[in-house]
Image 1 (cartoon, one colour):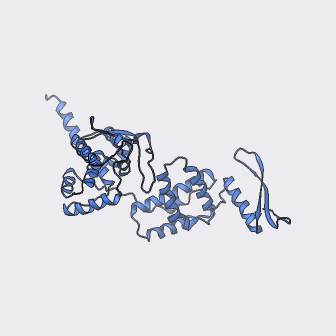
Image 2 (spheres, one colour):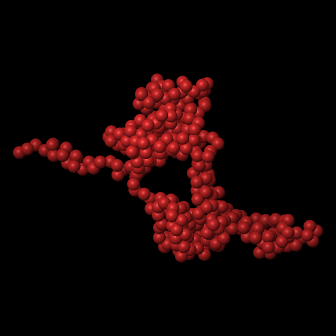
Image 3 (tube, one colour):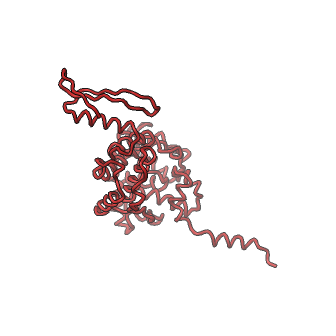
Amino acid sequence: MPSYYDEKTKTWFCKFYYTDYTGCSHQKKKRGFKLQREAKEWERSFLEHQQGSPDITFQTLYDNYIEDIKHRLKESTLKGKINVFKNRILPYFKEKRINAITPKDIRDWQNAQIAKKYSNAYLDRINNMMVTIMNYAVLYYHLRENPCNKAGHMGKRTRSMKFWTLDQYNKVLQYVTDITARIALQVLFYSGMRFGEMLALTLNDLDFENNTITIDKNLPQNSKGTVTPKSENGTRVVTMPAAIMEELEAYIQRLYGLTGEQRIFTFTRSLIRGTMQRCSKQANVPFIRIHDLRHSHVSLLIDLEFTPHLIAERIGDTVQMVNNTYGHLYPNRHAEAAEKLNSLIVPK
């Protein structure tokens, strides 16, 4: 990597040729470096970004990976990934060449994460992100193999799912005295919508004549504005119980001067989380997360014998996601099927 000294400006510059992704050759020149090593490092970094070489650093791989996936992900999802990389992965690997990362390196990194006493679900998430970016290196940077494959897995996705039954929910609701928290809990439990979807609701989204709520946007945590759903399935119209819509309409009438485009709910998660913690304790009911109200809604629909297809339409997921996430909640129908088939047999 040659670099040159400019006597006139008393600075260093680099000049070199590179081949782009179409196979065309170009000359690149960059001036203004105070030190020769700065010019060499800039040239190396430029070439790493241009060429799919396994000799690049993990930091360069990460930069290119984020640049690639940012066009395919929602802002909130991308922010979550970036946060995990910056805090849990980059500190260990950013200076390493990706072709020098060994299964032992991965194993040591895993042990360091396990020692921090993170939950199994979080460890599983971190590990999956490391596996994914190294698979990206195999596909696009000619890395011979993914070292994560030999290192083994850490963490595991929890199979248990917390939710409230209708009886438990009603017990908790008896202790909810704050009208705003009460309405929010009613909407979440009986619609299955996500918390961010509820926060994004405006008066225009409500149809009190037909008892429906239109869900076509989301307000991610720490976001300044609403975003569209992650998938086409996320945009939907949910039919609500008439009694809940009556409560919601009465609540809105108490909000002075609310216009059609204004958000109905402007509180933070802490109001609902605090209410759920306090009132579940008073009702002697196990505490669940806000998102678990969505699971509670699906559990209720399953008890009411809704099909996976109808549930998927209602909560904005695919049938496959419903089956994968909630399939274990469905009762065993084999004995019931056998009994019905048996009733069709004519006795001799």
